[in-house]
Image (cartoon, rainbow, N blue to C red; front, side, top):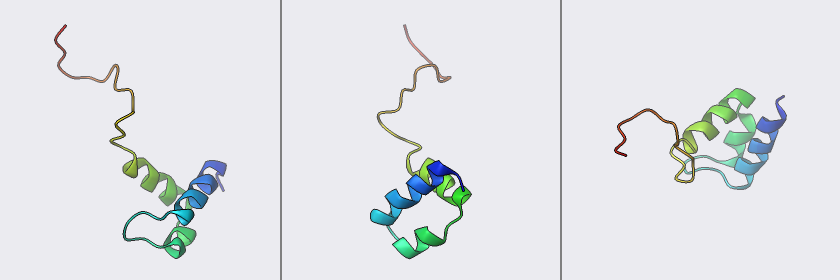
Amino acid sequence: MNPSAEKLRKKYMDNPPGGMTSKDIRRMSGDDLLDMDYFLNENDPFDDDFGEEGFYIF
């Protein structure tokens, strides 16, 4: 199993996201954990958006 998935498993078992239990997290595959983490942190306000495509006024 992916070491980063195991770190995420521990993180989410200690503090499961809303609507989930530690038991749910324990049964998830490593890929499912990585996907869940990605979508939970997709709109991270501290993420550096530099270089993203869009309209810029300089």
